[in-house]
Length: 319
Image (cartoon, rainbow, N blue to C red; front, side):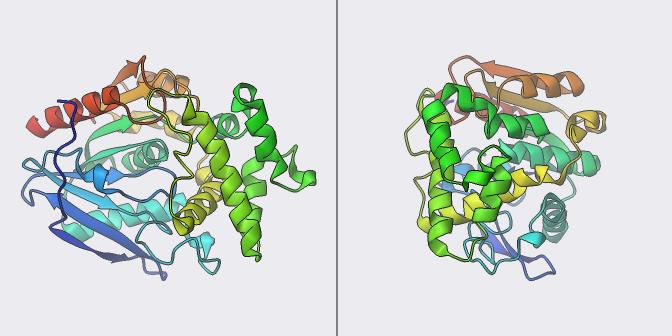
């Protein structure tokens, strides 16, 4: 089966109180008595979409989705300059996930997601292995410093023109430094025009990295409403500038904590945003994981991605 399941509406939803002024949107779909699963979206800062619900068999899964802090329907929204970004870190998101699990009365759940979502899922699973039944990841990332440096620097060798445009959008004094840090400063600028220009330039760079993939399009990241775009870039730059608040290499170093948790890692060989070696390294460090390499895919979803994600979720639903 390569088609997603039919559209489905949540049977329950709410706003989870983070205890510090943040309210995190969540929703539950499918069968209330089904196998619990949590979808962890990417970005960071993309928010959930209706399509994410449709990867789960609604007869067999109790699928939970949530908008991570500052994006989607969660409040305060990161597009608002008054939103306090010091309350939006990996530790805050991990606490939100565990708070949500307890709120919903779920003992253990399957984790599904990709890209930044894979980093957050791995951090959660290594922190709370007893709460995770299985993991399905597409586009594997682990937040290592060299992964971030590649995404916002090393990949420039493939797109020198777009890279020059990306650099030109920051002050001249910052152009030979750390791009995420420079952009994070711009996204905190009191001038809304400065923030809009920075967000537009950031998304143009992200667009370039995926535009030539099979099934890619020229505006994959920039094709979103203005406030969502501002929130996405503000959150992305904030996390990248801080190395996602993870010790460099920590998720691979501590992959032994995943022992006994079955995993499926699905990664496109043509992924320029997140090269394949990260998925390879994780598969070697996590003996209960199976790596599937897709020769016809990059970072974004393709028919091959859908086929393997759905197959993995369907198999775990039967287990």
